[in-house]
Length: 392
Image 1 (cartoon, helix red, strand yellow):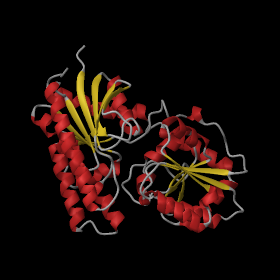
Image 2 (cartoon, helix red, strand yellow):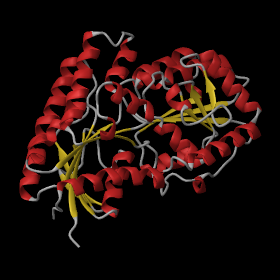
Image 3 (cartoon, rainbow, N blue to C red):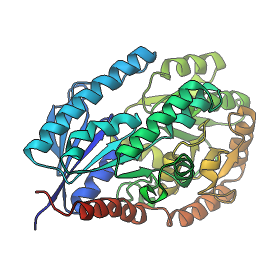
Image 4 (cartoon, one colour):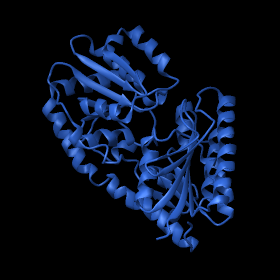
């Protein structure tokens, strides 16, 4: 049987990013030959095959800094990705090219295959205009927000199909003139082959409450709110906080932990292997999702729920559209005092937290990857059918 060829472009690392790996391996299992064009980390080869996925790593690394540095890095990755994808397509034509934000304009890196007959998917992991405006504290009428909206609109217009991470994002896209039939919401849930309740190894003993938070360490993830909540809890509550991941905000958080006098309760793990990450998450008593902004995918929450870990999360509409008060313990977004109250309540009510986790897991069965992957593969299959050909 002829296998279809596709390519995913993502300004990230492979196989370190679990969601990128999940999508690529899902396509391989569905009968696609998959190339991934991505960043190259220290010590990584420029090209290798990982579990059936051909990985092409570009000599660019993700860096955080001012606008000039962002533009230089984004621009460098865009140009190298566009050239690489064009070269790969000319050698062995693709049926579908998928460009994953951020930035949205990465869709244009797939323009050569698109003009040559391939179909183009834009996968929006973030709502850039809304996220930027909320982070900067400015209205959507700000000129930069309008520019990002124009970029989003142009990128969606260039694509044959658009995938976003939740219904709120889909509604916003439709409100801003992206055709409704073109947009599919595929929740960014974990692959249950890796994230499942069988990994759970402990339940709260009543001695030390283990909290955990994972992902890129940025200000909008709200870790600083957790540190302030630990200070408010004081020594009468024995709490240990594991922070898994790396990012430019880590030095500031380490300094804040020392200033607040909670450094003995906090452990920064940095980047860890996938196996170690799953171990840390599964051993936690509480999973924290204290994100500060709307329109961010609740993928961290989904990972905790899939593992059976009780969740305390900031009160965001993006989260509440999936889980209610009887499934997740919410606190007022950005409010350290209210988070401290929620943690103290969880310490005193382990059975109730386990019941919440159980109800959340039952709800999660509507969202799990075995359900979502049918939507994801459906977009690919539809586009291949529209192309009217299969490309070896």
